[in-house]
Length: 127
Image (cartoon, rainbow, N blue to C red; front, top):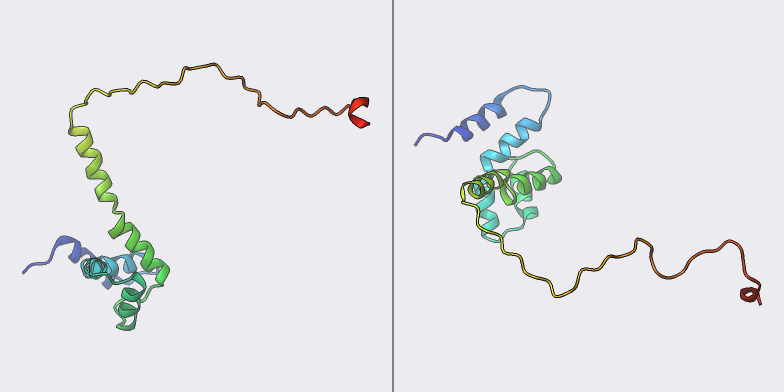
């Protein structure tokens, strides 16, 4: 079975000799993403998944980086936001119905009611 393009790119990035390890770490996470997602749906905590992968030396980056990748690439992927925007743009615009409010609209003063500071004291207030 042939590998997906994303898996091929991830493998190539892990093989590259670079000064920065960010791309390499992300590529390793992307290769393991489906396994991590499956473990999460089975009920395993991210900390347990991280410990297992780190112990097996499949990942070498920090737990914080692992959590960031999990949040950005599994839990809240940007791709779903893009597809949701495209779907909403393709739908015909429905008439928006406004619910009438029962409260009358009144003009409100910009001043706050209550205490007003006066630097000059009155004699009646001092006694």
